[in-house]
Image (cartoon, rainbow, N blue to C red):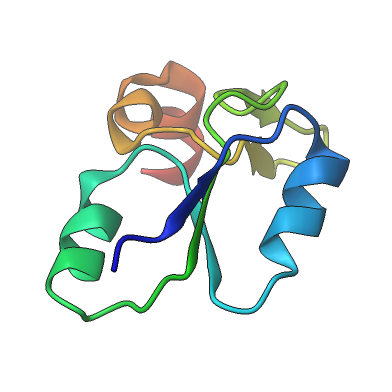
Length: 88
């Protein structure tokens, strides 16, 4: 059967939803949906993290590392000039 869909509006609500047995985060990638359909991944709860505050943020830190939001897309990383310079 299809997993239960959750769309939390805060990080605390997302953490609570993800604490449930069989919960998986969904950041927008279709790979997860295909994996569920093909039964490679078993998910009872699909927790949509795309709409959380900062979910698409790419933040560069003073120590040279980067903080990626839960729903940053690979295309966004590839297009970010700071990420390309630092990590390519």
